[in-house]
Image (tube, rainbow, N blue to C red; front, side, top):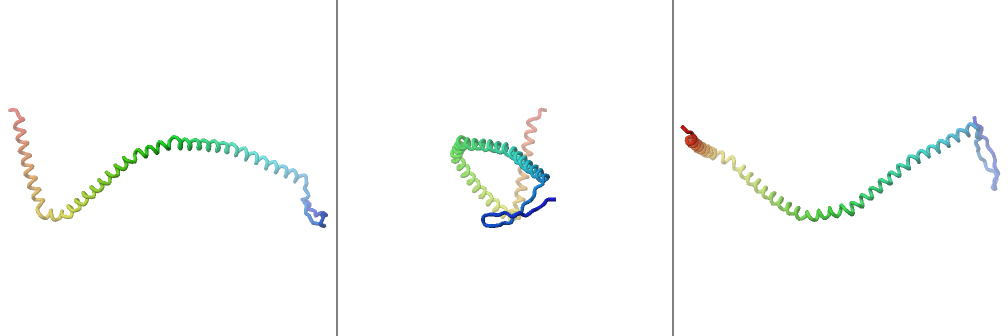
Length: 154
């Protein structure tokens, strides 16, 4: 066990109470071991951090070179390409707008046709299409008969 003693020290202003710990040789060895472990952990930490910081510096230097190259070489050419393609994009967008307006007219026309579809179906249009279909099939058969007669050698 350790002994704790109180010593009185005389200072310029008078007496002041101080508490001191008596250090035994075993405690002194333990303290030196702890100080050594602390120093060793500091060395390991520095040995780990220094290469990591050097690699980070190399990476940042490389990123800086890449950023400079981007600003000096690539960015002006991209800017010029954008300036060159802007009129073409404007023309294409104008044409797309015209097509969109045309499609709007087509959709409006189809909508109008669909509104009249029930009336057309009730008014006899299907009969008319049936008659026209029959006439066309009749003329189609006549055309096939004429081709078959001329194509055979008897």
